[in-house]
Image (cartoon, rainbow, N blue to C red; front, side, top):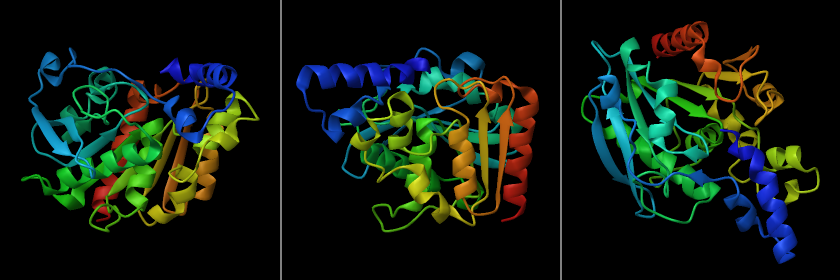
Length: 281
């Protein structure tokens, strides 16, 4: 997860080598995909799962895993992962959810894992996220009113934009609740954290702070570790202040980037949040 720390280095090298860095080139510095089949799968943890293939808006074929809840299902969580690795490298962070009676749908953006595609951009990843949500809504056995979203790091930004902006059918997202874990407030803001003069290179068209207010009245839970050296916890604090109610925030002492959910007590807080969201439907 610390690969984002190298974002500035890559961008600076590109600047020195080329003399001019376009917004498109700058955006690509955010993505560190791991291609190929995952060794770590739900099967290695004794969980049943289904390989899923679906298409993004532009026809790009994407891959994901649908993991049913263990026992009676309370709802289904759409997991939207961060900028590095693939769904296999991310799985351990949320593999505990099925045992808590939540189904889980994970997917890889284009260019990650077994998903096709090459041209990564904020818009493309946002549309991939919308396509994953659309697939989950139509899956037999899934109650569309009991879908929750967990977006981590870059995935938090993608989740906010995907829910707020119209999808290919002109519909915006309606889910029971959203957890945003270690999310940066905008592309330009995280770039500026690494170099104050480079934020202008990044468009904020698909940034969380541009769309977070549009998610109301969906309940929001902001989660961030106060020892996060990749995305400073103040990003979540500012997003929380911008968002409309209902909302809550938990800054976790001692937790590093996307590591707050390692704490069993924090997991219980998230589960209570999920339960309250579903009870309010």
